[in-house]
Length: 459
Image 1 (cartoon, helix red, strand yellow):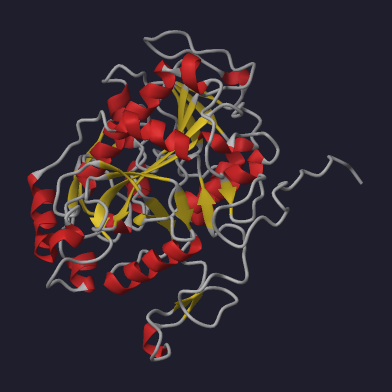
Image 2 (tube, rainbow, N blue to C red):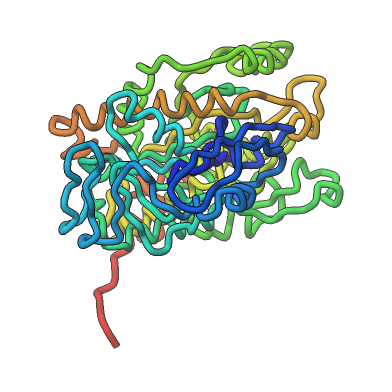
């Protein structure tokens, strides 16, 4: 699943290695830097044991008092057009009398790496303009933008419910015109050692909600079952669901993925010795895990979504099979996430009304931990005991590859992206909601026409 970077909008508290997720809970102690700001005095720097943080900011909230809810101190804050102020020591902030029209919206749970590097690299201060949006997570109540508002970023906190509700709050806020915005879904993830490695970057065509199934405890499943997961409406594993919720599979613009891939491969990806040591544990498996024992690279493969942070060979192989079956053999599961299908659900529903363009979505994940252990390591040891040391390199490469994509969109806006990158494949959900015929699943529920928004009426 994805990991969540500590969000320190007021810069009152900043972890030197940001993490608030169960992905980074393995006996890690980090230094907490407390920076004095106007107001009640804060405590001196302390050390916190970060084990089992589970995206819980309670320790930060206790130490930092109201820090997480405060707006960034180095930018402007607005609750609407009348409250806009200028960015200190910078160009005047744009008037918010009209809707903000970002060219890129970064959905980045691991946000600090963007805040800390974009300005230093000359791409603009992502905390220059900060817009409060009712309905966002109370931990992350602002959408952050560069001074020219061409690039914005939001954080939802982890999990499908948080992601879907925050995305819907954003698009229904009335503060943004998102009809031409490109969405970069950028987070870190568990990684399948068959296709990538810790620090590796993956750009997806499919997102599959693999846990949307019946589940038996494996100790109670029939002897002839290979997994305790059984698709809805079926009697055995490895069958296509007979009952569909509509969020099982999403397919995004493959032509846009190719364009994004060509930008991302320009990045000089980061690596470190600690990550190399854990990768080396996969070498005895030979060619099947050749990608795992190699250095980071940019690849094309797909993401799976589950709120359960699973680990181990059996579950990972079961979800590989689910991905293969549900995408009619074309999807390759290589990254795990907690938000992708939820975000895509919200965007698809708003695309029906023309609020967003579903053809302008890029799904990118970087591997922070392997989804299954190497030889001679138990699933328990792999998940809860051993240090995979992938968080830092995953965060770094998330930005390094992501900023190439963002810069490419801005640089080539007039010639390529303003008019859009036309998809050559089906895009949308498993039901065919946006029109067209899905190349997976039982076929469009509307015979390719798509669902038509109802007329706006009042009764």
